[in-house]
Amino acid sequence: MGLFTLFTTEMWERFNYYGMRALLTIFLTAELVTGGFGLDENEALAIYGLFTALVYLTPMIGGILADRILGQRKSIYIGALTMATGQLFLAYSASMGPEVLEMKKTLFFIGLGVLVCGNGFFKPNISTMVGDLYDPKDVRRDGAFTIFYMGINIGATLGPMIAGPLGEKIAWQYGFLAASVAMLIGFFWFLFSHSALGTTGMPPKYNREKTRLMKRDVFDIAIYYLSVVALVAGMIFGWKVTPSVLRTILVILVAAAGVGYLSFSIGKNTHGKTEWSRVGVILILAFANIFFWSGYEQAGGTFSLFARDNIDRVVGSFEIPVSLFQTINAIFIVLFAPVFTLLWLKLDNVKLNPNTPMKFGWGMLLLSIGFFIMAYANDLTQGGAVKISPLWLVLVYLMHTWGELCLSPIGLSMVTKLSPPKLVSTMMGIWMGSFALANYLAASFKSIMEKFDLPMFWFIAGETLVAAIVLMLISPFLNKMMKGIK
Image 1 (tube, rainbow, N blue to C red):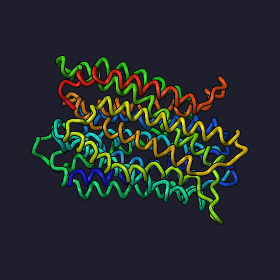
Image 2 (image 1 turned 90 degrees about the horizontal axis):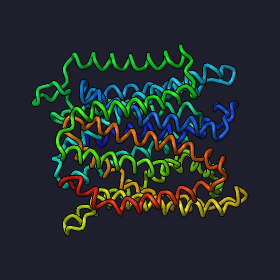
Image 3 (image 1 turned 60 degrees about the horizontal axis):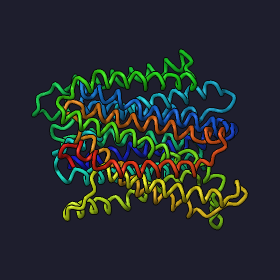
Image 4 (image 1 turned 180 degrees about the vertical axis):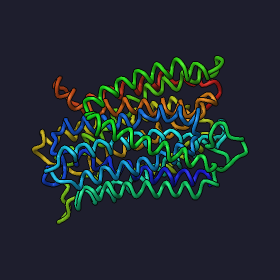
């Protein structure tokens, strides 16, 4: 029942995030007269990359706050309310006309900033709570994370499927508003079903047998929520912080967070050779994670633009909305997650279950295969002169889904198993930090490849193939460093 509570809460949060993400690039490039901003593709991808990078960077801070002060439950409440508010800012901005363009932009960036901060509170802590439901050596843990991953992808399916067409075909603001409503549903679900979690996620200084938050915690939640919204609004509205300034802030935050984590949090709370060895595995695989997700996250950027410009989207008299293509991966996750859950259990029963680093290698290999297919399909378009079948993109998403199922839920499980007891949310934040750099690189690939006149999809296919081979070769050494944790 605890897993079901977290599964459903995460499902609505992912509806919120992926519903908005499905709209972001095409909204930014839409003409002003249609409610968009009329940006060119590289500028839109830069904003998209900055947003998605910050979305995965702030969990590093949220993880520390949860471990040291708030606990996971309070952090999730704060994050959910904050993200719902961020979507309301986006919806209001989208409803404004071009005659108030500067205010429209300001409110839009406030909305993105509030979403980023809310995600920092929410994202590392709900995943940590899934791990806390199981003993570190419980063979069901990887399966539980795969089931939890189904919740993520049900939400990732419903978001683009509902919010996408609402925004793309009716009015942009309705898409963002649908995402806000979804997050509020998740908030109230978590509020009314928290009893299934027992003592999991309580603040660190609470009695271990306590299962309910107290009245003072409600005050803390309100203060953190209001402070975050006011701070972001003040920075962007009052201090005129622009995307280029945010990009500088991102670089500073990454450097400061890295020094802070390595010098203080990890150093202070990691003890003995065994813990240090396991932390080393997390850091190595977090580095590998960057290669995977910088390719995979083309889905919300260049893949959306490819679907818009190069895919034959007309079926009879119906034109498939671009945003619906982002449901393909999530649908495949929901279909294949139970298959992979059973696969790991069956392989474990016959002593053939691959170790975690080897699963990462297989995930990277499948991603590479997907990009080889994508590169070939892109060549078939002859530079955009020929529109190709949607099935090419479907096949790419299938390969990437299988790769994701070998890597992402296993990675979440791995972090909760290998982290020192006092650093679980902190290490989950570091894990999310690798997504931050990956997302920023993902959005930068197009402009970098154009600058050096390199074929982007062929390049990504090649680099991820090399990464897959390296991971498979070093997997026995990493497995030894895990010191008995499978």
